[in-house]
Length: 150
Ligand code: DAT
Ligand code: MG
Picture 1: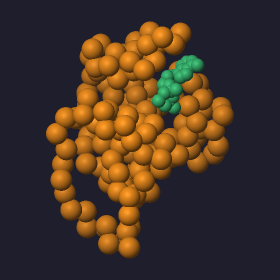
Picture 2 (picture 1 turned 60 degrees about the vertical axis):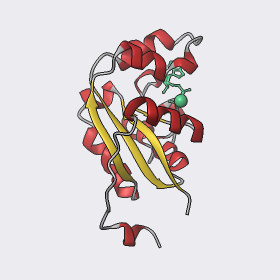
Picture 3 (picture 1 turned 90 degrees about the vertical axis):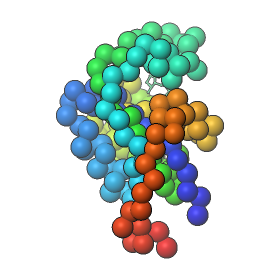
Picture 4 (picture 1 turned 180 degrees about the vertical axis):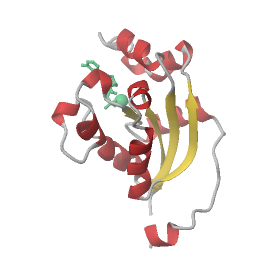
C-alpha cells in the first residue's frame, strides 16, 4: 500500500458558510485518517509563503487577502494515495469545470471562493505539512482501519 500524507485547508469561505462538518465528513467517509487539525487565523507571512508559487499571477494579491480574511481549518490527511485522492474529492480548481460529487462542484460556484486547498504533489505535500504543522502531528491507532484496508 502507498500510504501518503497530504495537506488540506478549508478556506475562510468554507468556515464562514458553515461547511466545516460537511467537508471534513467527506474525507472521513472516504476512509482518510486525520493526523493534524488546526482552527486558526492565517498570518500575512504564512499566506505569502503558502502561495509563493503564485506570486507572479494576477490573482495572487486577492488570494492572499482572501486566505487571511478569516479563520481556516488546516489539516494533515493520511491514506492510500491520499495526495491524489484528496484532490479528486476536492475537484477542479474552477468549480464550474468540475462534476457532481466533488466538494468544489457540489458546494461552491466561483474559482476565487472554492472552499478548499489541497497539496498538488508529493513535494508540495511535504513542504506544506512542514510549513503549517512542523512536527505537530498526532500518531494514533484508528479502530476502523481493519475495515478500510486489507
Ligand atoms: P488549486 O487550488 O486547485 O491547486 P491553483 O494552485 O492553480 O489551484 O490555484 C490556487 C488558488 O488560486 C485556487 O484554488 C483558486 C485561486 N485561483 C487559481 N486560478 C485563479 C484564477 N484564474 N482567478 C482567480 N483565482 C484563481
Ligand atoms: Mg494548488
